[in-house]
Length: 141
Image (tube, rainbow, N blue to C red; front, side, top):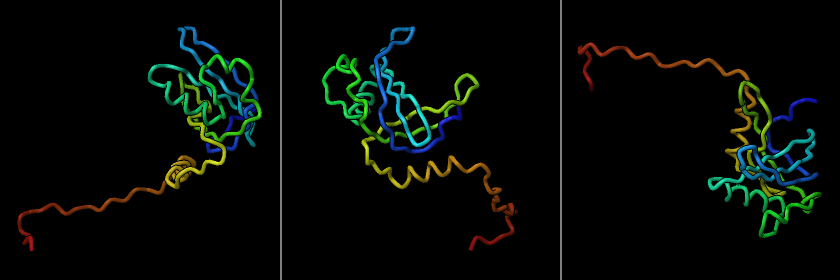
């Protein structure tokens, strides 16, 4: 199966669930289907990430008050917009969902430009103006 490409995609929630890392960090995982295939968001819940995870779950259509409400597949069929980026971890590049937006979200133009820069594989050579060293003979005006 090919790697999910980078970009911003309309996505349908197929299923979701609760998990925990071997170190005890709680997680909500969400499997999405896009025009490019299936991809899973791993939303790790820590003190630092809890506000972002709550916002992302709201963007998936979750209106509950507790993560225990996510034990049933209540978000399946909901639509969202996701941003996928390729990230390297331990020498392996994998696609990762970095943001979940409400369905219909239109990213700012700068975000679209950032995505375009990420797709450019070869850059034009850089040419810099060469300065003539000041020998003291030049008159500054």
